[in-house]
Length: 201
Image (cartoon, rainbow, N blue to C red; front, side, top):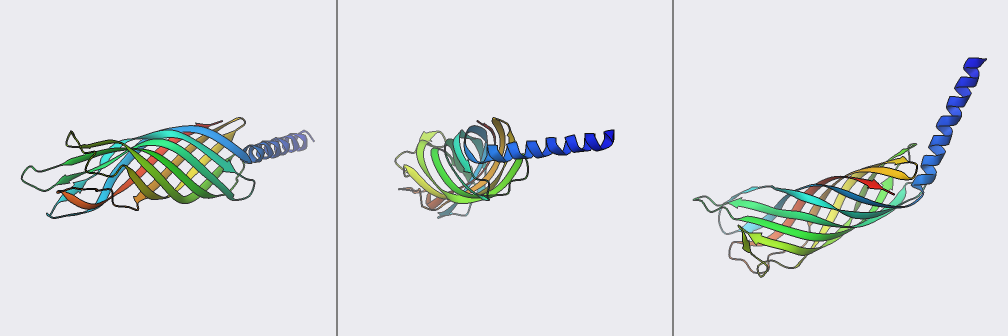
């Protein structure tokens, strides 16, 4: 009899925790996150070259809306470092260091599983250039001041009452040429991965 009562209490506790988690998922979450950006680029160049990734930081704010069904959306504002390093040989290795204030907006499909919610998403983002250097020299007159890009990725939210923990991975692919006037490269489009963790309220 004692075993039955203990099992019933455990089942009720799990049910209550699951119900609380589902209620927490249904609505708006404001959060902060940060992590790394691993960037490269697609480009045309008049010479044969090798290219290397540039690793930087990414971080900012997000506003996530989830429902008790599978649908949701998320918008944000974050600083992201991008760029690429090229090796044309003979010591000619220009490094492009670019920084953007990115405004991403994505639609999400998530599965409520108790206190966790894994989601996949896709959308678009608009970046406003905040930094532009080529091998330490200012390049503001060489690259455009904005960058329009597509986004695909996935995230995982863990709901703990009034707080939530987040892990986010996404791939950002540039949809426009950001090279405004350059003798080095043409048709340059940003590419970067971001891996971030955060906390929501």
